[in-house]
Amino acid sequence: MMSSLNDKELFLKKVAQTIEMSFDIPDSEKEIAKEAVLRFEDTMKSLQKATDHLDVIYEPFSKHKNIPTKSVVEKRGVLNRFKQASKEKFENFKYLCVLSIQKINHFANGDMEIKEIISTFESSVLNVEDEVEDFFDILGDYESEDFQEKVLESIDSIKNKAEELNDLVYDSIIDHIDTNIVGKTWMSENNSKFKIEKEEKIPMVLELYKKRQELLGNKMYAVEKEKQILNPSDAPRVYSPDSARTVNFTEFGE
Image (cartoon, helix red, strand yellow):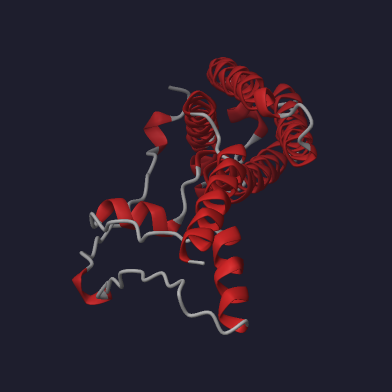
């Protein structure tokens, strides 16, 4: 009887290992996923730089009310240089968007969730792009009486759309890649951080078999797992000071 049970356990263990291996993602795939995360992060950094550059005109326009049209016209050369610099920054952002989509598209074949993520990302990028194009049109109409007001409203709209895109990338796209492809979770990251050894995992097939044997009154099969205690008070605390970027009026048009 003992030999028969052992043979069954060995067979079930092999079946369990085969099943679990079929769900493993190859390291090569995980590396591609990690590269995709880096590309999306670089894309968001470039978008941040582009929107930060808008403060060059936003801050003086918000601080100095009722700027005369004549003064704006006199500064049209400065406005044109600012406009060109902004275009270059947003073009770089769009270029990085394409690279990000190319990388994550590797996982889109047969994966509807990835396809939906790509579609949502593209729509959000187009929303930012539309707002940026409207802004450039407004900059060209510098003789308009409400030029100052339109510039401020347009920049606010760009920043709102950029923030929505940023939330999408970090809260949905990168989180999905880390959790479902790379396999990074809060627990796995902290296990590595605190050097906690992984507890022995009982394959589901064997666990079900064990429960069945117990119900039948057979106590010959027993599996023990080590217990580990993680004291939350031992975790180091990290403080990140807030920082704010300020732009002086003298920087306008740089």
